[in-house]
Image 1 (spheres, rainbow, N blue to C red):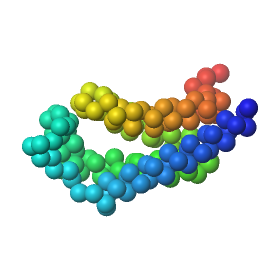
Image 2: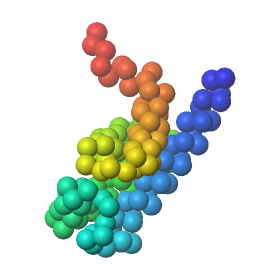
Image 3: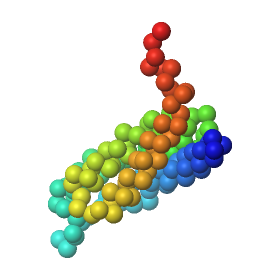
Amino acid sequence: MKRFFQVAIVVLSIALGLFFIYKGINKHFLSPCKVYGPESTIPLEYQQVISGMCNSGMLVVIGFFQVLSGILLVIPRTRLIGAIVLLPIILNIFLLHYFLDNRPHELVETGIPLAITILIIVFYYPKWKTIFILK
């Protein structure tokens, strides 16, 4: 059973890493800033936040850290660091959708990577618990 969890964590880490490498590159090179039209059903507050982050260059910074954490997740030795770098990013994305977006499917789409990230960090608990135990 332990072997199953190890293999599952490796597969989930690689899938999550590749996903965030793609999403980060997408923020840098592939997609321009979103322009929302008057027919958009997305809440105005969400539109303003995304437009502000895009116009200020914040999405490029987020994209950089998504690529960095994705690369770290794919490499076995740095998998835990990748998950730790990714956690605040995906948590903020999830909370942004929770508080400002009215589309429930977005919570599922952001909740799954958040849950996988937390699962990876919990799986590596024996490795990082020694940092916090003072003797």
